[in-house]
Length: 282
Image (cartoon, rainbow, N blue to C red; front, side, top):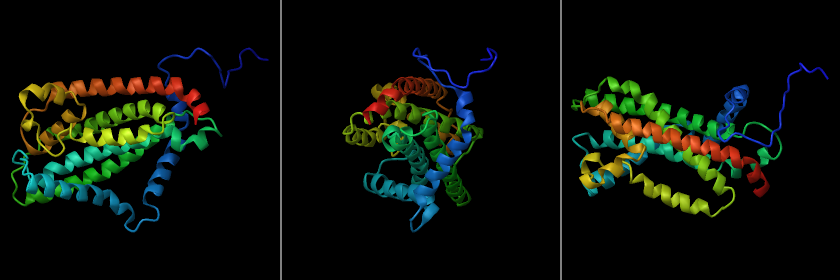
């Protein structure tokens, strides 16, 4: 055998803790796009309204929030029109929730594929994140349309240049969701009843972020814990970008970036270390 010939495969019992082969993942970019296309088609196949649900879901959710929290509970919205106040929070939360819910079932829903063919397993959760990133991009166009409607309607809203940071807000949310999903996926594959617990905790976690109430309502003694939630600075920064001249919470936004990246790195380590053993379980 020619000693200069390159190896296509190398099997090694000693694996690095943080193992993510970006070159290998890029080689499977066509597969990632196929998974994304599959999810897009599957989401709206055999539905009456089809892709219109991308717009209707946040609108219906926002309308329910408007009735319950604005009209019934009368929770203030910091002088922001209630529909505009709830819509960005609803969009960001739905992006996080859907991304997490999809990723946490990576092994369970794709066991039939993983048992038959090799490809980097990380491709599947990445495809879920890209799919939901595509959806939130369209929903943000809806938000801008509603925003312009209120702006031309005479409402006093104050956009500023920090709107350019919207991709950063999406990146933080996606990293946080992917990291949490990778960690949970390892355990949902082994303990199936964990699904019920996670769905319950996910509903509770929604109220830990300022989706239906402003950050100004939080008592001073709880503000530190409140702002340490990675979603809190994202939602508040998003609103500050469109509705006020208040400075962005840059300090907490920086903490949000670091904590999201830490959780993502932890998720990748755990996912890579356990992916082979999990296939024996499922």
